Image 1 (cartoon, rainbow, N blue to C red):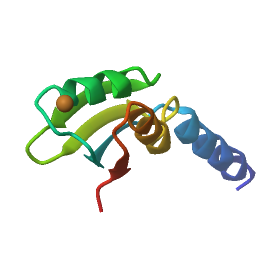
Image 2 (image 1 turned 30 degrees about the vertical axis):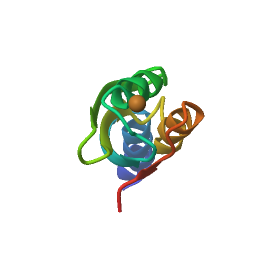
Image 3 (image 1 turned 180 degrees about the vertical axis):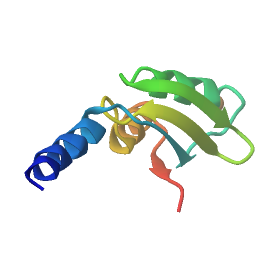
Image 4 (image 1 turned 45 degrees about the vertical axis):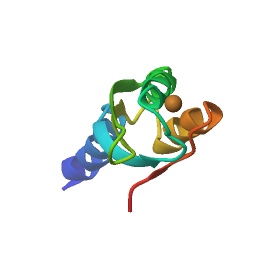
Length: 91
Ligand SMILES: [Cu+2]
């Protein structure tokens, strides 16, 4: 009984410390030509913790794989906004 009481918090702690790779799809505004996705991708890739970015010009979306210990969806959206392309997680 006592042992399980000690182990449980440790397990919870271990799972929060472990980095989890997440994928988010963002809708990206202002992409008007075929070169825009390159700018968006570069801006998002510059965010520490971002592993992979695929920007699709046709659907105006970016699929981003990131480490949720280092980066957040907000960080990624902000980087895109600063580059001139406001982005928000897809509903
Ligand atoms: Cu462009």
